Image (cartoon, rainbow, N blue to C red; front, side, top):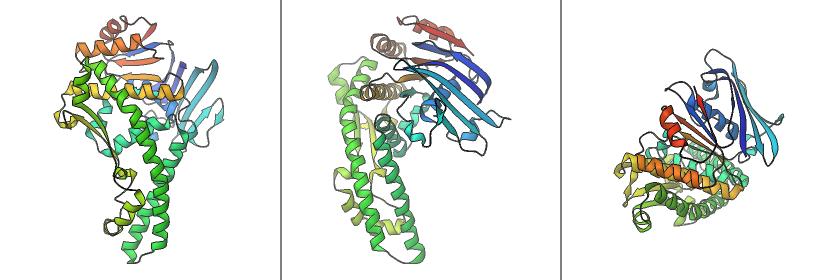
Length: 364
């Protein structure tokens, strides 16, 4: 699968711009603020129907304009696929495939598998558990549309249960029958999600460790002892239905559901401590890149197709050895189409020339 060409109209800082891409490596170079990351975000938009960096649709429209259009022409399984994302101010965003409008954006997820590695990924380390849950759910959903449906249903029931708890508090009343219904629904849906997440991480974590080892160029036993990725869930200890029943009084006081898969987390550790506090900048960046390359590997296996790989300014703050390891991986392994952004054109081209693949340089 490759993105053959891309057209932007009133998207972020671009009034109108078109690209004809190389099937292997494409480098977007230029000073800060010229729109390199915006091009990558447009490609992401075509895969997911939304921006990776700014979820507010109106803020992706060029200042002073009323709409944007992103058009991408792909070749997938020897077939041409035209994807268009468009939005007008104060109107619903539209996503089309070959002229047909998607009624539900989620039906498009996984059709154009994609992995992005960006400096903003640091949020996975610095932010709360919700960010890491979204990462897990995003990886699984690209290869399992049923999982996404179950997750959306769970979140809907969670909102309803929380609303009921607030109603109890305001009206000094209690409807146990309705609460029992929500408990049962959350249990059934949450158990499926927990099992899916557990199965996914059983496969994913060894891939991640292998990737980190390759990037860091360290021995197997050293990395396996010091780098840890651990799934934390209340459901490891007890069934969700029991947890919800035991937490009823606490939930009523808090007016919030304190138990469930919406409290899950993925712990990032180095030498038994949080990497957020004890990992160097280089270690943290290697950790995140390994995480995303493991995501690439998993999606590739699940979808039987090479995801598009977006590398946004990843060479910054990495030492020469780590950059060399990443480039070696890209050169030796069966990656598909890759897009790279960087502020240093000469640095980028000197790195890319070491890879035995065709490439194009786009100077913005």
